[in-house]
Length: 373
Image 1 (cartoon, rainbow, N blue to C red):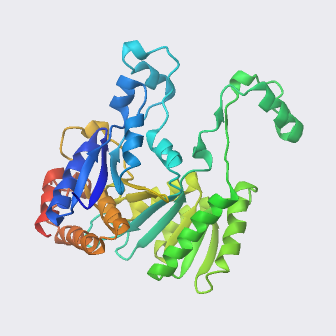
Image 2: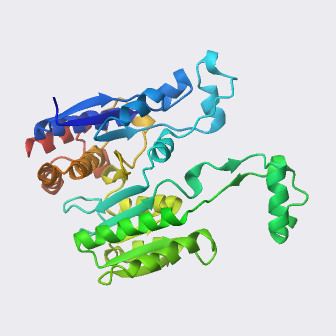
Image 3: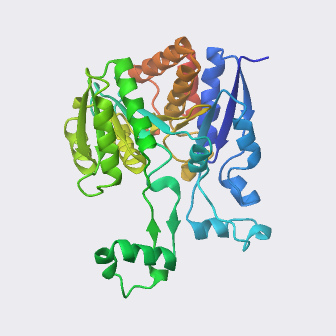
């Protein structure tokens, strides 16, 4: 019997390519694991009207960790049109399966390391080591939205916010869409404490909370207030506070000044993509969705439909996500060997995928990393 049960969810598009490439290096490492396939993504939506079927959720309840490739997502009307004919016009609504996974399994922490590896021609600087902690289950991504605006919701808003709503007196409910940004005190506390614990463990001198409390006073304000309380438990680590717009500017100007960043769901999504570009782009952007009972590791990039079947995309983000999984499982020696092999390949400069200005294929990049293991 294998030591680990690993959920294996390639998903759509190039997610399949980068997962196949990652399997090459995991096999070379000798990870004692059984890989259990999970259906997820666009093709499952088209044929079943559910991009995350119950059988995949059941599978994830019985694994030690999971790897996930990428999915395709499209707007509501397009999603409806691409269902097989017998499933159309039945009221099925597409919902992002990765968002549903995060909420179903309470994967509160989205951890996104963005590290520059010397020799990468796409690095902004070679000395960058940024880590973004993104709250993963709340904020604007909870899916609490309205269109058209229900009359009872409008009545309540008019009662509690008369000045703000008065300018829309002549606007019909059908012409108003509303998305709710919902924070909880516990959600704020958990993500901030996770960021401080990481900084303490790995020797970072500061944690920067990235919000917008001067405008979004109640939600961002709650995050900042809780961060100030928690910072008192970590006297050797400074708490820095910055607004999301200013943070984007400072990361372009002085990214080396920062280490651990913590933000709510959407702001964390934004700032982590910026950090990823500083160290080479989404081809190097790994991430982990971590909860109490399970963790799912994935690259930050999408399914890139235009590259499907071309064996072209960079698999390093997926391999670094596997490295994160190995750390999570306690296989730190394997994790270190994998990261070291990736760093050697990048530094050598002989193997570069298209995004790095070269012609190395997805499979060839994986084989080059495996050869150094």
